Amino acid sequence: AGQHWVPVTKTWRLNERHYGALQGYNKDTAYEELDIDQELLMEMRRSYATPPPRMEDDHPYWHGNDRRYSKLTDEQMEKSRAESLQGAAERIMPFFNSVIVPSLREGNRCLVVSHANTIRTLIKQIDNISDQDIKQLSIPTGIPL
Image (cartoon, rainbow, N blue to C red; front, side, top):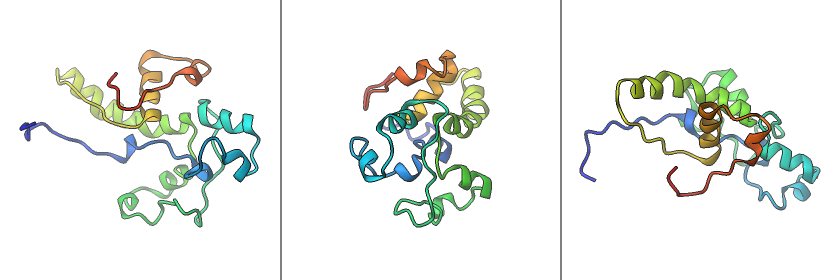
């Protein structure tokens, strides 16, 4: 777009939530493959506070050896083994409050490009959506809000 002076900030804090042991599984078959109750699986996927099963070091998608995460503390890495939407909010909101909000207050415009659950988290906090009502909020893929 020829606007190379526009600042771009990248942060792991805006990554998609970590689905723990569910990572890499199809939502329609994970309950069979992992022997998890189908209703519990849906609760883990859509609720605010119910986390998925913890991802172990031998999981094929474990990111503990990925150099992009090498500066995370042990506590941050441990929390990233499985996140509820609430856990994702604990990771996302410090960045939002320390970087995005001050920039907006200075009169800047901010474009946040991220994943559906990250956007759901931001909308929940900004619009004060209840833990119960957030289950119903779906973010469309590729459509600006």
